[in-house]
Amino acid sequence: MAMTPERIHHAISFQMGEIHALFMFAQMLARQHHSPKTLLPHLAEIEQLGLAGIEPHPVPDATIEGFQFVIEGLRKAIAELR
Image (cartoon, rainbow, N blue to C red; front, side, top):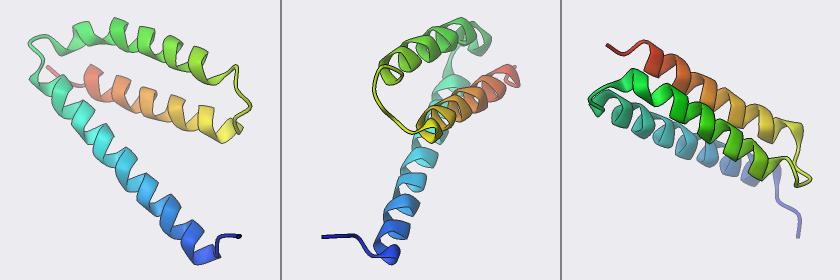
């Protein structure tokens, strides 16, 4: 059974809300860290591990772009702290 355009829109919007909440949670954790800038090397490691887990699978380019967009947003947010 195919999803209606309204249902597809709802599902995408729901996922956008989930991602935004997780992004904000990650920023909150970074703000609470005693030395936020020390998180940057760990973020680079997580990026490599995350990409290594995604790339072997047939996923749309948008999936990888979305992953990289969030990582870059976290990188910028952490760099702006203290």
